[in-house]
Amino acid sequence: MIIPLSRHLFELIAHDVINWNVPNDFYISVNISPAHLMDDGFIQDIEALRTRLGMITLMLELTERSLIVEPSQVAEKLSALREKGVLIAIDDFGTGYCSLSYLQQLPANYLKIDRTFIDTIDTSSNDVPVLDTIITLSQRLGLNVVAEGVSTQHQLRYILSHGVGFVQGFLYARPMGLMTL
Picture 1 (tube, rainbow, N blue to C red):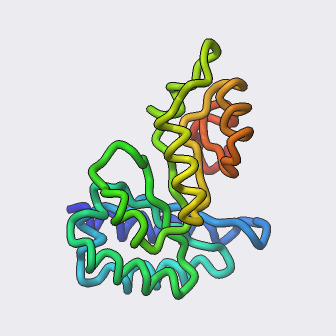
Picture 2: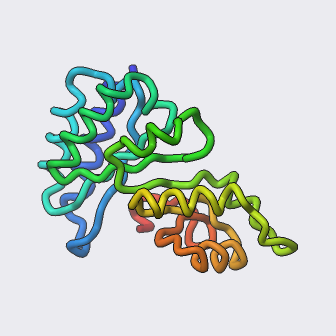
């Protein structure tokens, strides 16, 4: 059932972006299910969506859990899409079962640190060794780092002072409908 739903979502996205007036560096992120990732028609579905997006860059967000199903097949599919200009993000990093060696082999552009690690930043202490290690590892692997779930100025200052280039969270905006964008 998830694959037809994903394809329907792709249709809705393609329909909505037709009238968007966005800058050239704009991109849209789509969460991908493990089942769709492993489907024989996955690459064709993504290529079709990418074509319909025109100049808008497509980013696929995959959780760690979806990346460990068939590691070599997943890496091959993602490499093929990345060569065609699709960006790849590992979503909710730190909550799954991805080994560090596998992380090094993935053709990813972005690593999105799960909000549970951002929540460990509090005003009484800046001692968050696991978060610091994830940030450093990501940077050493050449990945763009995204901090998910940033909700306070203190968290934002900490994240920015550690070289994290991208931030998501309620500090900036809550989820909103198309008409509100």
